[in-house]
Image (cartoon, rainbow, N blue to C red; front, side, top):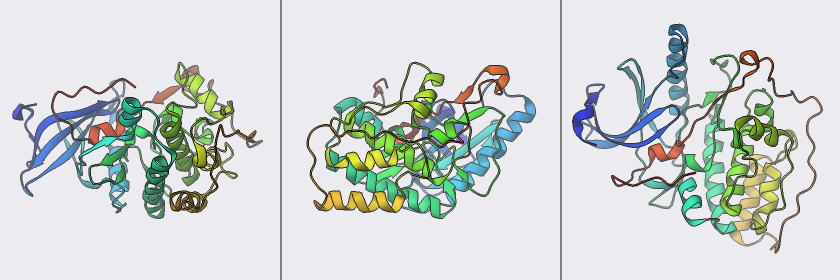
Length: 329
């Protein structure tokens, strides 16, 4: 894209679009003050919002950008700036020249367990830094994982992140996140917690080694139902990584594998000290909290469930040659 898109904030010259999703467009831009290329996320509110709701949307966006800015770690894409222009927010971020894990899975198929374990360990370190800062990601998925040219796995798109100590600012009945990666406690209407990010990481690792989503169904309601109630099929390709994936995908967050335990297991796998496994990994029956909240269909929007689909994720942050066509999900 040419420079015709103009400049925002008096310093960021928009060069070309590098991704689009349910929440707007991400641009490659040039910071005229510091002389570097950046990624600029143009955050567009849903068109059906009322005037007051658009104001709440802007407040939430700025709050989320501040939350993401609290995390300083090489495995987390850095937020540089946030501003409001042309009637909506813009978030200026680190431009990571990379390929997304989602694209890698779609293009090349499943990856070896050791490669997935290496990516998983790096993502755990990024989540540790975020959680230590009180920030929950809430949308960990392959399209939000950048595989950088220098070998790093970078967790990106904290655009729907939240802090544990802030009350949610959202429209009643909207579930923020991607249904196939949403933890059961969130699909049932509960609040996000650190264990919720670990569940999403488990789904991400499942996709990395198995090549498909374990819970994706034909529509959002069916997908959320599968997240809460469906048992996993035996893992065919996970090998030595299988116990970690299963531990992260325990439906009861109180029984879910902790971040520390997952780090220890993945470190053992990469060191070659974990027991080798061959053939399918059986899936034990999981328990679900007795007091889990049922999916609040009747209470949401007069019976309609509104799900904020944050699609594209990390592809927004990838630097791709002009004209590259993103493969379908």
